Amino acid sequence: MADERLHADKQPHAPSGAPLLDAACGHDPVGLVMNIQSYSTKDGPGIRSTVFMVGCNLRCLWCSNPESMYPGKKVMYHANLCHRCGACAQHARPAGSITVAEDGCTIDRGNIENLFELPDVCNYDAYELKGREMRASEVASKLLRDKAFYETSGGGVTFSGGECLMQADFVRAVAERLHAEGVQIALDTAGLWDYDRMHPVLDLADLVLYDIKAWDPEIHRRCTGQDNARILENARRLAANGHELIVRLVVVPGYNDERGDVERRLDFISSLGSAVRQVDVLKYHKLGLGKYRDLGLEYPIPDVPEPTDQDMQWILDYGRKLGLTMTVSG
Image 1 (tube, one colour):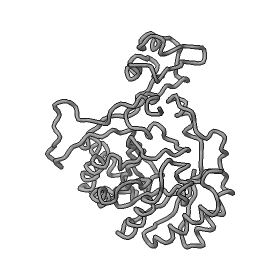
Image 2 (image 1 turned 90 degrees about the vertical axis):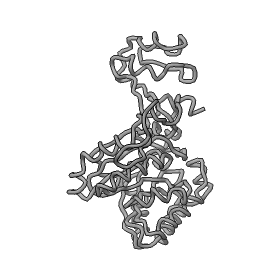
Image 3 (image 1 turned 180 degrees about the vertical axis):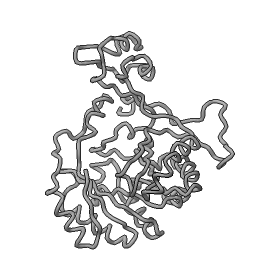
Image 4 (image 1 turned 30 degrees about the horizontal axis):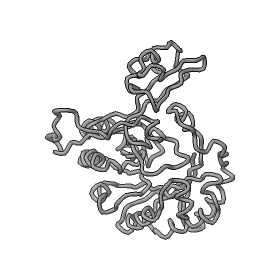
């Protein structure tokens, strides 16, 4: 139902007649990219570019990037930009799929047939298409424009999402081009994938940002829709194979902040040894709430309070007692 409401289209494909090879690296696949954020300082060390890929295999209740969660392109409607001119309603098929009122437009996302035409119809940018098909060579060229900033700051490029490894072939093709130019590569992942299949792209990563959302499998299923056994096992394998990790713990009051569960997560992280560079404790926030509204979705946990720095202190203290380098943000 959620996929239908988002009007997700098919997975990315090569444009008709376009070659899949280029002279530089050979393989030049097409990926579906949500956004490329330049001058980022929150997705690894130094100044970075973060490539947000479309698609995720978890359904975290607190996700702040719902436009990246489901596969396919999306159309967001920004009521604050809408002039209530009615052009979209006149264009929509079938008739009546969009109604216009003083407070904006209501879109019947389960019924409208030409949603993806609306960004071109609206003269006020109230409709925004999210998700762009791009070739690996195109993305790499764009990222390499900021190579000087990466080098002077100790930064690089981070692939995020969604779950960036759901488009592993594309990520690998971009990373190979960057790696050949000496650019540091980081992968931001939740770890729900087959390790052996991901081995080629993992070997290109200088750093892995790894999310551990809960220890107890029931809590994990309730919060994300999936079990965490493979996630924990993949963390062990990454550490055993010498990958440098920054482990991230998001803390959501009433959902995954039970003291025993958080302590078990930190105990596990400590057991990974010297592979763990640091632990980032991420405070739950509601910055993504407006995105749900703009996608025509209900925010799953609207009544959850945002934790304070004081709420986080015991987590930092416990981790530091284990010898972990701890930070907090959010």
